[in-house]
Amino acid sequence: MEDFLFHQYGGLAPSDLGDPAPHFLGNAAPELRHAPNDATAVLGCLCGIWECWPLFTRITAAPGSVTWSAFRQPHRPARG
Image (cartoon, rainbow, N blue to C red):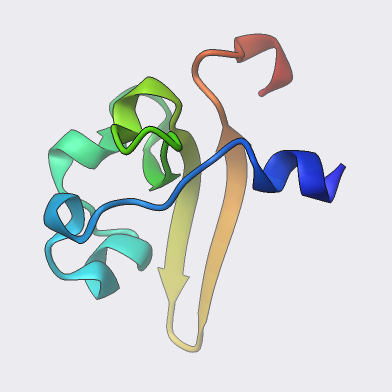
């Protein structure tokens, strides 16, 4: 299963992210957020266009910890 998932997503392009630290700590640019679920895109499509197959997660930053939860693939709503 892990190998299958590995081949489903690509990284986000540096040109999309800007400074990656705020992005991966929960302060992403609005275009990389899924507002209804307060989620942030953390992976994208292998084709290089993150929007066509994004993986979103909710990022909660607190002093001393960062938690990623509620992973979601919007093109597969039944899977969460």
